[in-house]
Length: 132
Image (cartoon, rainbow, N blue to C red; front, top):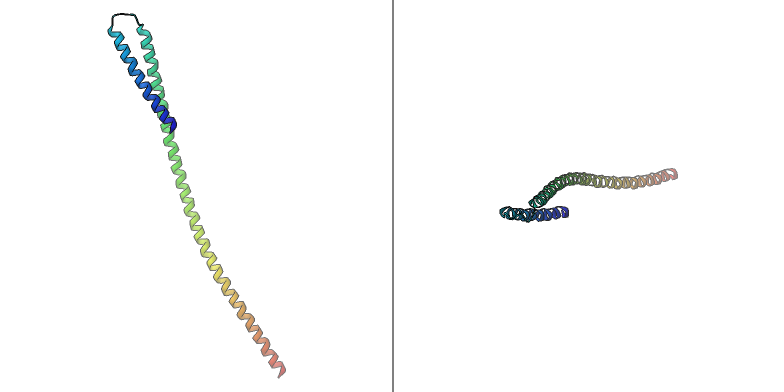
């Protein structure tokens, strides 16, 4: 953006310079006094005009590159958003599976306690039967 601003300012300056030189050329062309060589003024004007065209072409190229860069950035932002959405879905699924695993672990622990209680009860019954 700074380069574009610089080029705009330079383009504006060169445009003013071309206008100034055109005014000078017209003034000298109106006078019949050939004291100032018109060839030098015309050459200087043509050189400034060429600079102006070159700078304008460079500015157009930079603007084109800037549009391309913005397009690439927008594409990357879209890809990043897609990855974030997918990641959020995986996080939600992971949380859901952890909750299921915690529930199963709780159930397994309850069943193990019930099984242990049943074993103890069976041992007590076997002792009573063997004592009778």
